[in-house]
Length: 388
Ligand code: SF4
Image 1 (cartoon, helix red, strand yellow):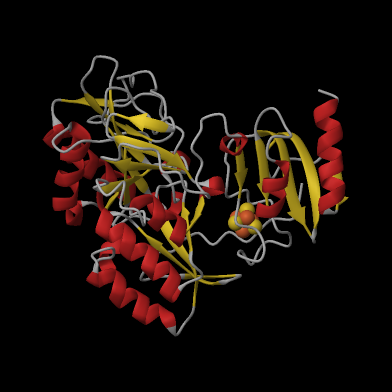
Image 2: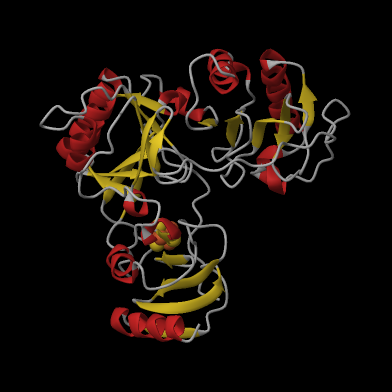
């Protein structure tokens, strides 16, 4: 096991940026998980003007800018507020994060619940900063692998239900209003029964109250959005969750104007963006366009020099390893393993400037080999792949 990384216990925001290895990290929560085309272009401008020009899509479907300085941050915030990418009220960021099932449509249950919850946001209990809510009310839940403490989902019976994280079943509710009411009530129960000490719902051991029986099963999981054509537009992938601002700008508003029909960009927790009302897959370098691209089964955190806890660069190694390993690959700058919670077939973990190799495990699992340079690690992986 590698030495423990520092656990910060809070999530950065826009009003509360986090100092990282390459400057301040500023996280933007797209309202209802969607940015208009104009907002997307504004975010690209912001990344280039006030940051390093990189935009990251996180596993909780947030967008973040890197390389912001103490001097550029106030200007960035004024710009983000002007373009309604960030609320002018810093307290708004203290409300739990809402993650919506991607490909929602105006008026469907996911959109209706999210809108109701936005309107009643002040009625939610004040909870620890990492607590999140998944609104996953399509025909089948798709956010089951994404971190959330409370979920509104579709049940096996086709109705709505509310499920606390850590429970396989939840409570059936009659309609969208009842779902929101139940959720608000659950957040107060969580806090009143020691939720601040637990930190997250899955670690919360207080028994559920009588009015929230865990007796209704969620419907079988649906598939995450495939790349390519979708009934709402086109889905593209971001290599390891990152995209250069000029690449995203070109996808949303190409110089030729040929895809000017794109109306909005919906974020997902799967390193994929849904370009709404787009009728042609953008032919732009720097995006993943095909479901067979091996980078889709690889996870790599930002690594050095972007994260101050990393002693190795992860992204260049990830690019070099692309296609070498059949199965899942995780490259982690340290044992915290931010990029992937589940075990991977092969995991390379940075420690003191070298790589440790884990097989069938996560970044904090015991490695089978330790202390490799990047080229040595590549050799080890090659031999491992050949012996399988
Ligand atoms: S896993 Fe990567 S991003 Fe997370 S703390 Fe470690 S080096 Fe940083």
